Image (cartoon, helix red, strand yellow):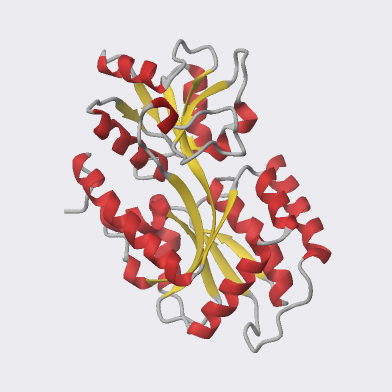
Length: 321
């Protein structure tokens, strides 16, 4: 809770004079509701609140964050797609809630029900062990998994880190028991307590917990193309001989049919916000990277990810029948 309050204070202070005058356009004429389909304090919630404050300043109308957790993000996104497509109900979506969830369950929506606005931020997915673990590299961990002595956890079945790690295990031709968790925090607590051997999570969860002494974690590798500036000492999977790249991304979406002029206004404001030094400061504070994509490119990414996830979900028995 303290971290959430610190974030709100920091965001508000930076936003008061940093992002200029409100946009002069007919839209918006009233407050905007921004649905976050997960509980407060998680990665999706952090990104939502990070973008809401400056967006409110730019648009000249309140942007009200509404947390609607449930069903791995499906509840909040389903509520968003059922709203009137007028630009006054938006949502923050991610790999799991947008690209994966409709392939797994009767979520109440498909990608075709979602209007992409802009991708906002991302972070590489990584694997970490307890700081006193004997495993120093990914190959150490693979050897242990081949011996059948390893279990692991993630923020939850069907989340980006869970599916990316299942894809990696499949590529490596190995299996390990996944112990479900309800959040990245819970998964990290399981590795710290010794309940599981390793955790897969978005890299933004790691910096504050890395420690060489007991009571912390050791990040073994990140699924990034090159070393991540938030954790420059952590090698990539590629550096260790494994061609695995996967990020957890977050973006702003609207119900299908939202007017193009509204989508364009929002996408441009997000672009301007992310291009500012103030946004860089907030992204660094919470260990994310800015990753702007405009509507068409963001939509392509959503669909490409869904196609890539289909065989993974089928392999682990989580694909919708």
